[in-house]
Length: 505
Image (cartoon, rainbow, N blue to C red; front, top):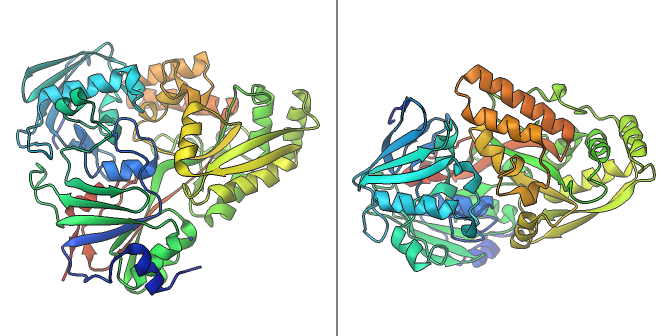
């Protein structure tokens, strides 16, 4: 097999004070950008927060990327080839690829990066995606050969993620990954003032060519309505928006453009099946039956999206009407609760992150109201993002409101949660033989139709077991001044195309 290369608005003055900048010319060579959530760290192999990934993908590069049509395209690697038995994957590296310290990206850096990802001590977010790697050879500086223990269809998709970024072997040895950012991507991180601002400059050595701007200054404004106000006064050129209440106002501004695309990421109520009474299948199923997903979507997100099952990839997603209890049935939910011995209900706490997503509190409130009808007394606990992420990674919650990332392949998307070797098992707290087996079958199967059948069965089983209650998918929103050109929104929500954005006269 061969893959070819191929949310009260502030006044303009108040906003300016928050930004610490004067209104800028639209002809500036620096792109002035804003978002509401800052990165939580700089280690590309460990970060799980969307805000971190959106920053790091501008600094670091993986071997390959996924484009707007979810096709694998070159990044550090210019070509790749599987052996006939699917157990070897060979990459040729771009000879022009350099890290931002001027050193060449070599096969030794690739090997060291993947060995770091595979080392359990690292705590890499995507480790489970690469467990088929049995060995890595580097016959020359521009060639990397991955020896696989089995054919692994989704591994290329996994390698396209910033969680699989190539970092310098020397920085790994020095133990400096995460304390500073040295990547091979289009921009260098010159300054990071956490929860305030990032300053990026163009990487003149980027193998991808010249960037469209000399740099990007990113202001962190927790109130997205303030971001919109800053755009109205042309203090901000480009913004990442998460709140549909704000995003839907952008088209009313004659000078602004809204980019809106469906994404693979999903809003979900995560139950913790290791905590009573969620240990009981019928309790989890009762919760699923008690929730009106469309009402959650309509109330929290203005209907901006669609109800979804576990799989969000359009070619593989099952019609939600075919999944367990996707039509709300309170009577069935009460019956299941009684059968499980909880006819009088129970009390639990649901956690959510303030601002990520902006809909989290509203989602929790709707769910709280709906579950009260079957006797579940839900206490809502909102946390700062970094505190939430720490609790989430430890599985330290009864229930959690989450927005989780989607991937172009279902195995890459879910194996870390729903396989026995998954490195985010503490987050999922549930696994069974059926899920694990289906994941492994889907990983090795190369026939597209057979693969679709495997993952359809996986999706139906997961929805029936109800360890999590999938809610809906929404949109990726970015807003820009109309003189900004070249940004391409994608289903993965990546901002990578900022590398080629230009500011028109």
